[in-house]
Length: 483
Image 1 (cartoon, one colour):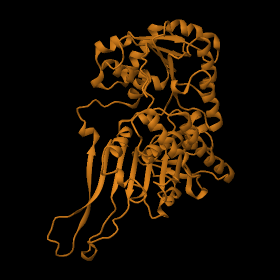
Image 2 (cartoon, helix red, strand yellow; image 1 turned 60 degrees about the horizontal axis):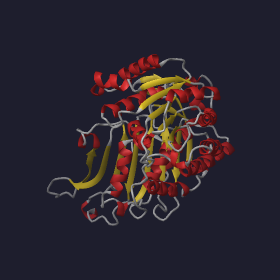
Image 3 (cartoon, one colour; image 1 turned 45 degrees about the vertical axis):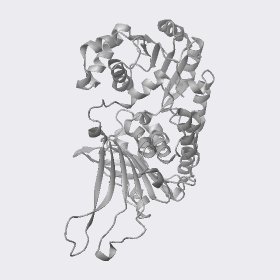
Image 4 (spheres, helix red, strand yellow; image 1 turned 90 degrees about the horizontal axis):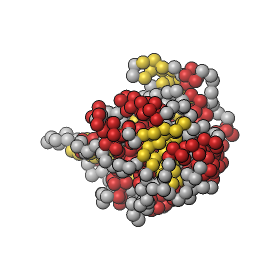
């Protein structure tokens, strides 16, 4: 349920970092320009960097000049936005600096929202520092940016630290995929259209595919990524949230409790994965967009067994999805940047066109999240003609391009929605603790099996769709990845 308490201040940890410069400041500017946040909301940034208000304002100005779309740039709005901003340097590992931060914030009895983007080892001292400075009362809510630990145990330690001073209703765990418009449209597609929900089950669906592929390599995240790997970086959060939204039962209402109750039921129903149902890979050298790229080991500067590719055949053990495999894959340096959900329906029970050589393909629903945003339903249609040599049936797409259908609507990045919901106190698009823990239990079981097998990741060429074993994972079931 949406919290009716507003906020008089927003505190951004990690305010000089890449996420703040690329996403958070442009998102907050967009909310300001559109009049979606209170005129009285103050934005205070904090980080280790030793700078004053004026220096931070200039850093923010430069970030907005670089990362705002051209159609967003407005000198008058920019200046009024920058007037909201202040900065307080802080070493979050030391409790001493937090009182100065509280003094900088001043009176926050009107409500304080905190966006905490920090290294996992700083979560606990940061929470203690906030508490010592009186910044953890009932008037405060806190948004937690991932990574929230690297397994169930470390995640629970972070959650315990946060829960020691904040109630669950004050904690907003962020998965930026849930702020994407197309992800939210998945619920509209399922629950606002009579034609889909009666077929959204094991009687009509053959399998589901979820792909989140990237063409980039490490992109300066060498230490973090090598300690994390594709399974924890992408599957544990983004992909499992897409699984939950795709597979969940209809919630009673579109409120936070109803939606998150249904998601966690799916996550708890995930069957442990067998060794034959998963593939680890690591990219070798190859070419992306006709440009030669190095292997993971060369990018990293050392040999590593960290996976950059994962493919999994998952099962949800409940009534609706009994016997329907969910094929999941993610990877770096793959052939194409793509995030999509593919619903593959079963064939019709009887082909009435068979005696006239009419061949049928089963219907397929593709929900593309990025880089394009669309919903495409592949249906069978008869090719025009006199049919003297047989009926020719062909697959044709029924397309809903969200970009074109809502061309006049302002396209927003995910953090605009998530920051606004954090400020307003609406937790619907944030992840509850029991969801996070259900995700980690499933992921930890996979990692334990990898450790027991001691098998090295399978190599694949950059610019391909991953190792051959990833293709075989589906092909042995008579299924091909949607490529």
